[in-house]
Image 1 (tube, rainbow over the protein chains, first blue to last red):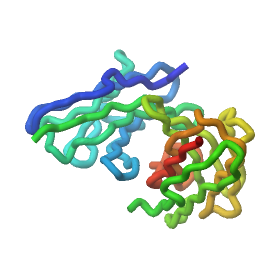
Image 2: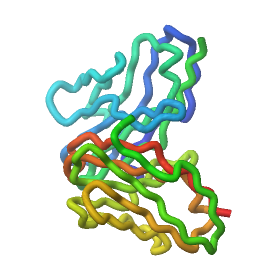
Image 3: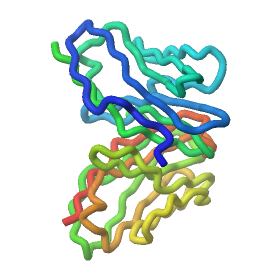
Length: 111
Length: 114
């Protein structure tokens, strides 16, 4: 069974709009979660990660994510997107020392 | 540029061919990974190597054969593949294999099986 799921397959929005991408995990025990991003023609790279401590995690390029244990969620947010944020975003969870990825969300930002 | 390179970037092969994918990392990491990325499906972990030893084989068919001669190089040998094996194959590396560290990904090899 898929242990990490992403709600949206494709999100289209305009520059300066706010972005929120959903991610849910479905396993117990120690929870370690990641968001990766893949810009067009580029490699996957880490945006941010949560291991413990403050549930609000700040990442690169103005992104943040909030771990909400009661909702089994780790949603990614950015208050104001730019055209350069057009990319595919992947949520991943660490389970049994292995990364399990969601199916990804394609984000298209229109200028 | 992440410090992880993959060659070739594109590969087209017939079902009876034998080919190999190559991955090299210049980061001094001890763990290396092969993933398969198919359209509209989650990234699938295939193999994990730690200090050249295979620590994970995620029920991958034997037509995929990994090789890790040293901590910097990882190969994926392909033979008698099926059209459904067409996908983007990603290599990644991390400092250690327990997943706590960030994984650095290569650009991938786009494989098409005819």
